[in-house]
Image (cartoon, rainbow, N blue to C red; front, side, top):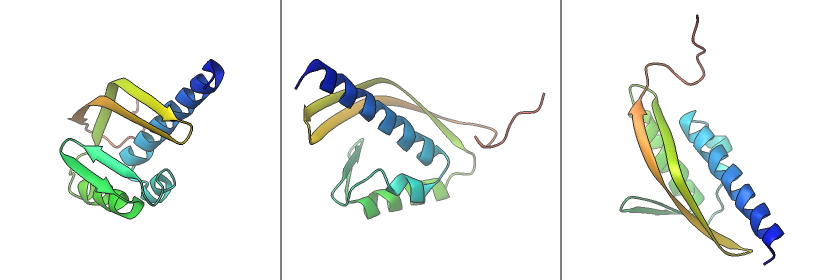
Length: 108
């Protein structure tokens, strides 16, 4: 794989990760489902989910029990491109409760 192809793939994966986080944070599960294939695997801590429907269902259930909006920030995103068809990644996520929805603009 050439350096140019590698960098293009890396950028595409970072954009994908950003968009997934965006839709999760806003509970836009129809849009989120577009980012997973039927055989997708999602791992978080000790939990492993297989398949688009199970992944989206899990995010829906988790979001339904939250009284206040939760913000997720991440750092140290590590993406490993295995070949042109597969890649993996990991990051450190910090969660905290916020007083307002991300769609509500603060008034000054």
